[in-house]
Length: 460
Image (cartoon, rainbow, N blue to C red; front, top):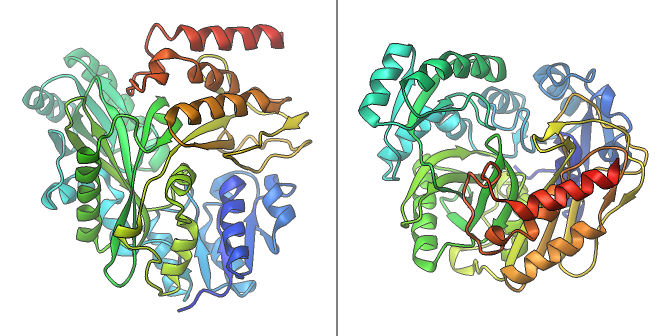
């Protein structure tokens, strides 16, 4: 069925991103919003907008009846969920189908098979993808202790029903496990309404690499190469690069083939991402799959020229992918910095009203944001303010361009991660491409510390 009108079931910069893709395709769209987002930029720029409830997401962006009602009363025939909220909710996708609304995403079955992270591990292992030693769900401390002894410390506890760093705890010995097991289950229950956790061997020195895939209903599945996502705080990404700075042609080929194999085993359609951990010896291990558009999809678009959101809409309309694997060529290098409303070295979430706002521009710079001067940040949602993306002929040029873009950026009225990002761009370890998932916590990030300290001193 050809998509003729899209309900955008999200907020912030991703709502704008989907709206803009739809407009370029000549497709009208409707944005839903909470009372807290009434003055948001997506609402201001929307073809049409519908309020779906009060500020708390449980009463608005997670309210399936309200979203479905908004789609029906505005005559939409499709729903784009963006990322977060209901984007990977199999029941929401199923209800969309029941009301003859095209869910712009994968099938209900594909979502269900990898929604539980422990089940996804098992599925991908059966499909031939490498995985770290681990377990299915563990339900007691005794079971966890026995599994950890069998796997060998260090291990990591992970929430089976979700991600984003919540419900994750590293244990280096049995005492750590005893301290972290019940805490991990409690965090998982609070975040995902499920206290299921599983165990994997923990890699101390590794990289977080993800592969973007696209599939259609004609059995075509391709990959758009990889992204490097190792710079994280609390297991949540801060800076991403495409392609990976340490990925050679052979490893890129093996990663891409593994990702396509896993997606084909699912009968996958739409955009998705398979996430891997990679060591310094060229080994990689499947970690999880995200059955949605990623926050960082833009840098893959910059190096491949493929509009991933338009491909999602095309596939949902029953058309094949517009590109074949042999058409995909990675050119140059792209970097994304997530500008979050966060304060201090511990990245504490913050709110405020945007005062002065100057966004960067010039050659090779893209900014996806919903900010404007005078905008008051609601306290209910994620702290992401903007995504500054740059493209360069090579990694060095991209880093220099990002440093220049960050120097140009001014956001007052709310603390941001800009000082930290500026420090990273001049850090010798980062510039050498020698980053691992412990980068933020590692000692010796002197350039980062100096830039952040100077910025904090200037603001007092």
